[in-house]
Image (cartoon, rainbow, N blue to C red; front, side):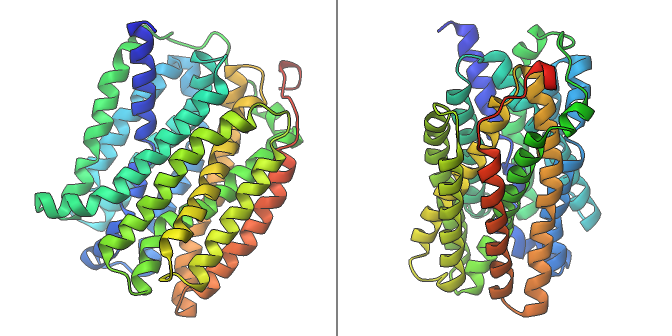
Length: 390
């Protein structure tokens, strides 16, 4: 492999590592943030909700940017804006917290949509493998952030604001590594994205969108509230953070293996259904016995959620015929999907407030997982979105 290709892969992976720390890094600090800023549980859940809303609302910017400056430069811009958002939310006051979180999430939204297209553009013969590697890097970034923020507080003496600002450093490093690729990239895509109208008329698009949205909803609920659930069950804060990190680490291995295996088959239905069933068992464990073998529930949950996320992105990359089609389908599926997902953390925070515990929210989560299984059944069936029907 040439040096240029090594730098391409390294920059791509480091960029992927920065797609979740801005969100996952807040979860273990959520109780501290709520006490410091004076937020209610609903207000605390709203931080993640604001970010996930931005993931949905601003995803459609990506095809427009790709037309003007190309996918490579779009990714570079996203990394720089993510760093700016992480620095901004470390300033004093709740408005800066929400504004910085929204800015970081907007950049992540653009990068989320761009990454499957970049896989198709730069690695057209290795879509399965690079999708797995990319998803594993995304999950690894979330795992590292959730595991390290509390130790970083203790090691540096910073409060949550200082630790949040430190999360900008990896994004800046990724931007520096991706800069040569962006400078070599085309100023605009020669094959622009297909019109959204044609995408919206395809039933396949809506199956994929439903799968993306529902699996994202159940994921972000756990990302936002899992440490708090364990704290309420009597576990210490550092252990709660480590358990969240454990489920994310399990997702790394799952994300590497599942796309390679599932991509070899015309139908991904068996994998999507199996992933959904495992996620159900993880939710049940957290609901019925959160302090009893919590590591087991996190392993099961990690396998299920990691596979679900990887399969959703693999299906997005496989169905269209070219990078432009992937970018267009990715924009629709991730934008609408993340708007749906944004309801999760806020809904769970509200249900916790009115019910006084986690039984009602987690039971609702099990119902949502049932809908995810149905969506996955239809999204995983063989189909092709070719140039003619895009």
